Image (cartoon, rainbow, N blue to C red; front, side, top):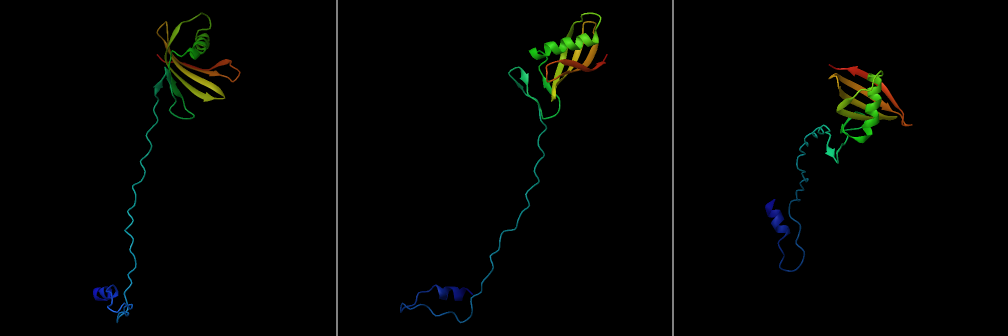
Length: 141
């Protein structure tokens, strides 16, 4: 085979094209390199909340997102929660943690510590018209 290739590329002395080789040339098919399967994609990292400008961004769509318990939008929500828990007297309480969820309006889930040291988890729904409604209140002592 090598002799046939050398014959094809050897110039002739008379300037005429070289004669074909005595035996037909062997044509080899091109071989593609073997396909190596790519590794499966790694699962996405779980979303995390990040603090930016004294507010906390949500980890994803549809669930509760952590928020700053000192956010001004929570003042009327806290008052509605306290009025529901302590309807007979004006109570005082501190928001220990707060979360919000976008619904038809906004749900706020507050963990409260009252002056009497009792602990509560209260969910308050802010409707689209701005009115507040306590949808659940549970004591956690």
